[in-house]
Image 1 (tube, helix red, strand yellow):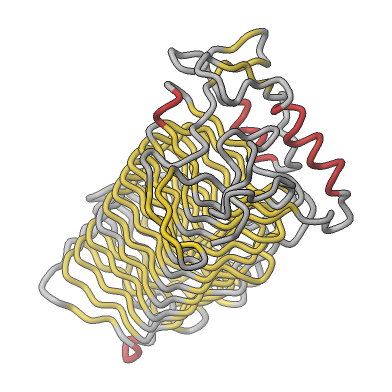
Image 2: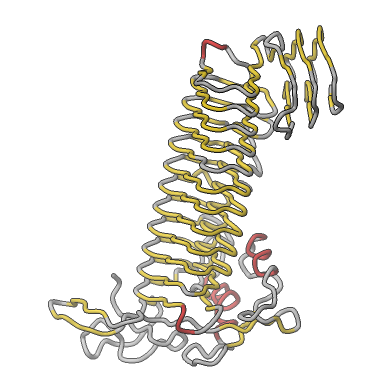
Length: 465
C-alpha cells in the first residue's frame, strides 16, 4: 500500500505477505492508527522530507507485532530504549533524544532522523533493511556509536544535508552496491574506528560535497571493492585506515586542503589501484603504504607534497602537477615494481599504464609537458575512467582534441636540502625517491645513485627508508 496524498487517515488495517508493506512519501496531515504490518520483506518505508508535516502515527501501528515509535517536534531528553520494544523509530524536527539498545528489522530504514538535532544513537542493531540502517537528513549533531548494522542493508549510515555527524566504533556489513557510510552535502563529520565489510561492488566510505571530514582509524575488509571515495570536498583528513580492497583504496577528486596519512591499502584483484587523487589542491600525502596494486597510484595535484610513502605494484605511479612545476614535491618514497599479480604481466601493465605516458614527457624540464590521457584510464576501473573523463579545460589543464592534457612534471626531490645519516656518516642534500628498477651504483657511498633515473630525474636513492 502506498500513500502519496495529503490529509489521509488510515486505520484498522492489516498488511502482510508483500515485498513492501506500507510506503509513505512526501505527505502532510497523515493519521495512522491500529495498523498491523507483518511478514513483509520491508514492512514500512517512510520517506517524507517535510520539516513540519503535521503527521500522526499512533503506537497502535505495529511492525511484526512491535510498535512504530514516531516522534515529532519533541525535545527535553527523551530516551527510546529496549523497554519501548520499538519495531521502527522515526523522529521528525526533534531535539535531544537518545536511542539505545533497540533492534529494527524488515524496514525501509532502521532509524529515521529528519530535521533533528542533538541525537545520540548507541548500541543498536539493524538488519534486513531496504535502504539505510540510520538515515539522517537535514539534521545536526548526530552521534552513532557502538552499534551493529547488517549484513542485509544498503547503507550503514546515510547522511544528507547534515552537520556534525559522528560515527565511531560501529560494525557495518552491507550487501551488493552498498556502503558503510554515505555522505552528501555534509559538514564537520567524524568517521572513526569503524569496521566495514562488503563485496567487490561496495564502498567503505563515500562522500560528495563535504567539508571538514575526518575518516580515521577505520578497517575496511572482506574484499570490499572501493575503500574511501570522496569528491568535491575541502578540509579532508584520511588517516590511519586499513583497507583490503579489490578496486582501489583511496580516491579523492576535486578536493582542497587534504591530508592523507598513515593509511594501509592491500589490493587484491586485477585493476587494483592503491590511490587516486584527481585535481587535488593543497594535499599532504604522507606515510601511507599501498601494496600488491596493479597500478600503484594516479595523481593530478597542485601545491602538494607526496613523501615517505611505500608503494608496491605492477606499474609505477603516474604523478602530474596541474600548475607550475615547483608546486608539487615527490620525495623519500619507496616505489617497488613487483611481478604481475592476479594474472597480469607486470611488464605489459607497466608499459600500457605508465611508460606510454612517460615516454612522451620531458620530466626534467620546466616547460609545460604534454601528457596523453586516454578516454578510459588503463586501470580497469569505472571510477578512474569517470575521473579522467571529467577533466575540463581551464587555465591549468587544457584539452586538445578531447584527449590531450597539458600538465607540468612534479619535482621528484625534497624542496630543500636535508641532513641524514647513512652508515654512520651525515650527508646534506635534496632527497629523491627509491625505485626498485633503478640499476645505478652508489659510487659516493651516500645512499644516492651516481646517475639519474632514466625516466625520473633526481631519483637516485639506493636504499629504502
